[in-house]
Image 1 (tube, rainbow, N blue to C red):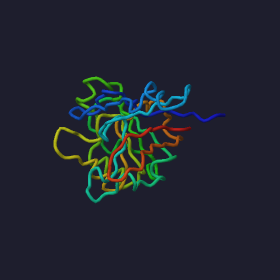
Image 2 (cartoon, one colour):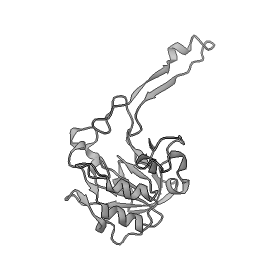
Image 3 (cartoon, rainbow, N blue to C red):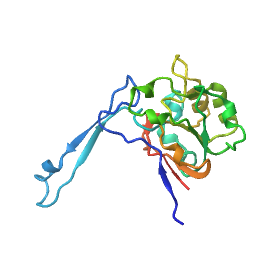
Image 4 (cartoon, rainbow, N blue to C red):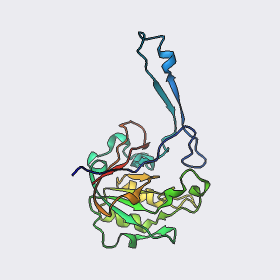
Length: 218
């Protein structure tokens, strides 16, 4: 029987706002097909695209450098943490915004990609996406760290509460070199466990965050 692949990433589009207050990507031609016809032989044409965007666009991964000046950047990601990792989907019931450590009761977390399914992605590309989103508490992050999660993802606007100026979940997880994937989607298509998760950004020096094509296979 063939494997099933589930795409867990939002599409990046020209003019799309991921995080209110941050600029949208500009996607255009560097070399259009029409212009290329003057360069190549008749019948041969190419398009070379160009994108101008900030790192926090679409579904993206945070590495320690995003939070800590001395943390490793995208080049320091261990592939075993981000590629073909056994995963667990954590279903969060609608209700309180703050997701505490009890959400992970009874789950094997060690060495796994822990994907928190809140259903908030239903608000993507609407004003509601930016207001009142669910998030993890510091205690939840400490439990994920202490139980050895390989990676943590969420389908919400931010894994932290953004009402104040601190970001305890980023601090705890990235301080333990646990990558974070935010703005995920389609987590409801996954089984609770028994899948493998992959989210690999480009290997870019000096950047702590970049979009990923997050997906699962089972």
